[in-house]
Image (cartoon, rainbow, N blue to C red):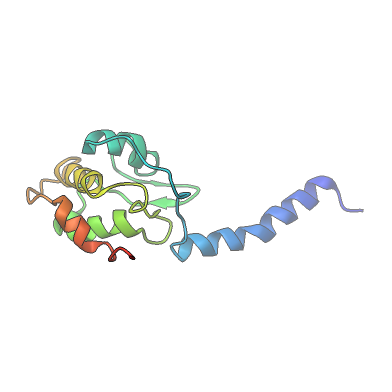
Length: 137
């Protein structure tokens, strides 16, 4: 006889590959219509990003792998983090649907100038807008 506890474990194990494949394919996203109210980079980081990347931006490993943003040489090129925030990648959600160009520029500029990062070239909302696909008529 199969115990209910074992049946539950089997059901969870069978559904994990579907969720994992969505995350790896970059299919992690927010429902349409949701937006963030925060406007400045610090508030956006504290209310949106630090849940995964941690308050000190040193990242975490556990239920997933959340890369460190602190002292990260990959942030030297401002377009790299801009594209990741805008379009997502792997388990990184797509924020382009829930943040406007100014919010994305603000949070990228904040992370690039904090946590041991000292990149001073600022990303502009216009540069984010240029990364977005053309709007459909």
